Length: 398
Image (cartoon, rainbow, N blue to C red; front, side, top):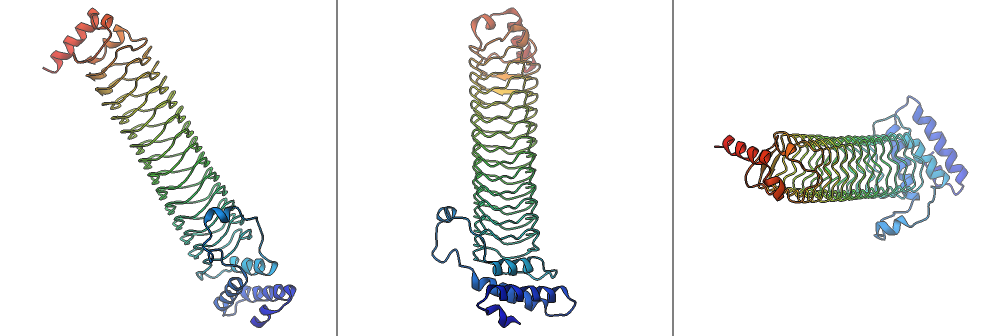
């Protein structure tokens, strides 16, 4: 029967594949041999996409195609097999293939070309898909848990609702991909490209995104608690209402990012660049912002209770109605910042620059701990209430 797979007639080859599928569905042995022969048939009939070492961007420009009917038939049979046999599908041209609901756990698909392929609901648990080309592929609701996808190209891929927990995506290109609602807990996405990637409502808890590029990415309402985004480029990213409790954002670039209503309690933002960022109503309680840059940032109504702002630069920041109670400020720059209505209860201020601050009153300062090294405009520095508070602060630390 296997010999008929070499027939010159496509119809004969498809018919033979259907007969082999019938044998696979039976109770007789030899299932692994049939699957191996079908995989061999596929390998002998599709071009190797990496033979000429084409650059990924050249592959990206190739027109969408579909596998020949006999190749697609063989792939479908292999995908539906019931055995736990591991598959070797490396370095195959599978562009546009329909592999929906395929059982590919532990399969090897490294360096294969799967762009425009349909992989909805596929099981790729612990599969090796490193350096594969999956641009525009549909991986919605796929199980990619513990899969290896390092250096793979997933531009504009559909990963909505996909399970990517503990997945390795180091150096992967997910530019413009749709990952809304995806599960990426503990995923390793170090140094990957995620420009304009849609991650709204996704779960990124404990994930590693260090040095990743997330410019203009959509992370609205995403769960990012305990994730590491150290050194990540998140300029113009949308993080409205995102949950970033205990997240590591040290040295991250969040220039002009939208963090309106974001939850950043206990987050680490040391040396983070938040210039021009929108943090209206954000929760930054107990966050660490040592040496952070937040010039012109909008922190109106933000909660910074207990935050550490040592050597932070908040020049010209909008802090109207913000809660700065119990914050620790050492050499913090608040020059020309707008502090109208801000709460400073028990804020600890040492060598803080408050010159030119807008809306700042003696009544606000009367509840803070103001060391004599704090720089104030003359009218505030000479105010009796402020002077009394400075004296009280000095006695407190004697």
